[in-house]
Length: 468
Image (tube, rainbow, N blue to C red; front, side):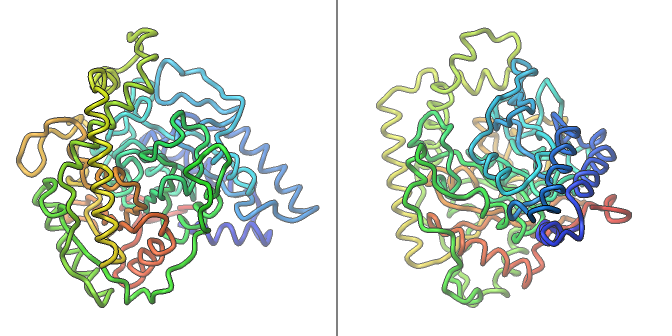
């Protein structure tokens, strides 16, 4: 599978063309999409039209930017001008935006070509990737298993080389969970690193755009294009550019914790995978020890904030009628109906305390290592996770605690493919850094790729033949 960085270099030199890159992507989608269902919409004609225009521009003026001619996929929650954007809902099955989201426009300005829109649960509410409009996006390692959500379509698309790079969004783990389940790299930057001027609550720092790719270098390439301030996003203003850490990679101070102390439960098989992965971490870095910040109250705080924000942002959809909305989406929105101002502010107070605990923790350590999920990929037929570590879940998002506790405090995090179990299920290792330390995060992840072999592996049925 050709790395995005290598394809970008070839496109810059003109040793391959944008048309060839798009045709290869479309052929791959045609081959795999009937089984995997990663896409809601494939914009083949528009992509080829843009590719021809970019090739003409290259011949006359050179490349337009660092992603000149690069096919990319965009999660179907995010607006793409002239390309259907359904948000995974029957209600918007025919919706075609007239403007691009800011992050999409940055990709286009850099020369990228939107190949299509990837599947997501309805309005992104769900940790499995299915909806009534498209059906389930299945795991390329085993189509009976879930790809994870809510950026499951993007994770599958990059894992199988349908596209070199894909966009995702992450509120409570929606980039990192499918990256872990599918065996690719999933990067959630610090909120504000990728400006989001379309966000209704400009100061809300729980959700962010993110990147899915097959390698750390590929993820860094896409992040570099998408990152940057916007005058309408106050969380993006005044940030220093992403830069590498001044510390030699081996000397990074690493803490690891299977469950942030005892903040959440994980399945026994996840614990076994994590212990094996930590052995690789310990061999790659000089200073590695078991430690965790105090995150008490964080889970309840996240659930309160998620519920309140979900109700505030989506109650109008319910008011317009519910016949065309999924029961899961309705439940998620209704969960916030009765959250009062006192509960909301108490959750924000807990969030502030936990953030300060992390800040103190990162005075002692440069990097925190956790599992990317509390369970391994599970059957599509199961629906949602109902038990973790042998204990019944109180809500359908309980199993996302390893990621949503990081989202709560706005830290950058990356899921790195660490290993594949004997029965063929990927396991991702989550790396967490201080706010806006994406350079340090990428440097450490790149080091683990090379020193520990924590890197993308093609699913077995994709290891032969033309893979893009």
